[in-house]
Amino acid sequence: MKIVLIGIQGAGKSTQGNLLSDKLGLPYLSTGHIFRQIAKEKTELGRKVKLIMTAGLLQPDDLTVQVVGNYLGRPEYKKGYIIDGFPRTVEQVEKFENGVDKVVHINIPEEEALVRLAGQNDGTRPDDSVEAIRQRIDSFYKFTKPVLDYYREKGLLIEINGEKSIDEIHRDILKSLEN
Image 1 (cartoon, rainbow, N blue to C red):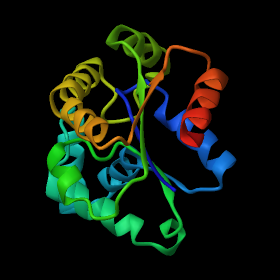
Image 2: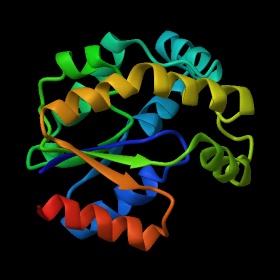
Image 3: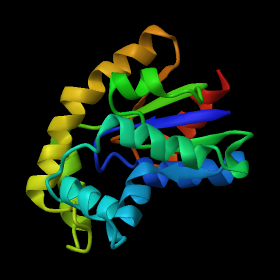
């Protein structure tokens, strides 16, 4: 099964992605983690990615599709996967050739995300300043809402209330995936 997790920063995608990975036996992949790794590299690409991340902007669609495609081409992802942070734009959806079975939108209000993230902000990530977080939340609403609409029209979207406990959210996701 190929599952996409979508939600604003702080919605709990990583937490749920890891729980689902353990429960379903599928590898979990976070595009945020991939791009943070690239940003650490002392290369032209690494510097470019870091600059874009620090500003809280989205990575270019072509680059994102290429990087994700390269990762998902690895043998460990052939039988399925759980991915978060991709696709974030309709252009990425249209260029993505790997297909998805279900898209899980973990929905929380912006205020809740900011409260959650304020408690996690340790300053170690180049994209965790309040300004960068607000920029990414704004980008989510601007670019990713049409992605949700796209998958809703295809009948692949599952809406999950992300304001519940971690266990309740996990149960809700599993129950929705069974249907």
